[in-house]
Image 1 (tube, rainbow, N blue to C red):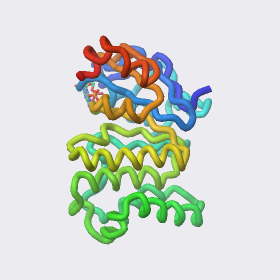
Image 2: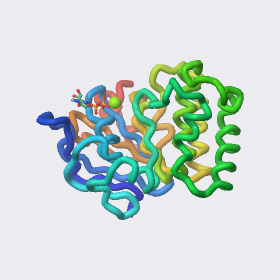
Image 3: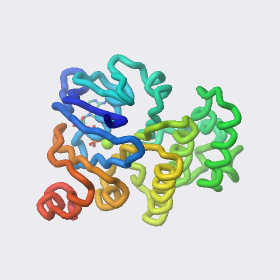
Length: 236
Ligand SMILES: Nc1ncnc2c1ncn2[C@@H]1O[C@H](COP(=O)(O)OP(=O)(O)O)[C@@H](O)[C@H]1O
Ligand SMILES: [Mg+2]
């Protein structure tokens, strides 16, 4: 049994159907890429998992159906979502944003350890703790969003285009930390990316969405090695 399993998920916005039966799975402790062109339904897939959009079919996490679960309960199950555009609150300080990650936890000593870990990963956040999040650069805001998700102590992180709008060097640094969080903290990741090359370097398995359907799936190395797939879906 995989940690996360989507089975024939259909979802949309009011009368508009966007996902037409998406099935995918994320094994415990793995990184899985979800690729596809703009508008393919990647963000809607993540919103389905977190209960942000109405869906049918089934979504199971650690064997338990997430059907009719509210977003807060999905978080309690161990799923942390870093949404498109990062979702940090720029009217709050860096520290206040981090507290939004840890506020549901009751394991105080472990929380303090996780703060130490976050500041090891992202030293710049320690320096800026008391400042408004609006003073952070785009890369630092992405770091804050990841740090906040990490402080939820998730078993799975859903990352929606963490590289968007960032300079290549910063993207590299952030992806290295995502990899460390995956290997050392044993957090599984469902990684939505437009940058297919980068995503496939990180993940074990990948799915390519095309207008709300899985068009191709396989191991990341299979997808990288398939010229037709690369040209048609990955754009390089
Ligand atoms: N809030 C919304 N209301 C109506 N349609 C939406 C909404 N969000 C996304 N869509 C539509 O759903 C489709 C898939 O969008 P999305 O899941 O954001 O794709 P991706 O993340 O792959 O770019 C697009 O056609 C988009 O216009
Ligand atoms: Mg999107």
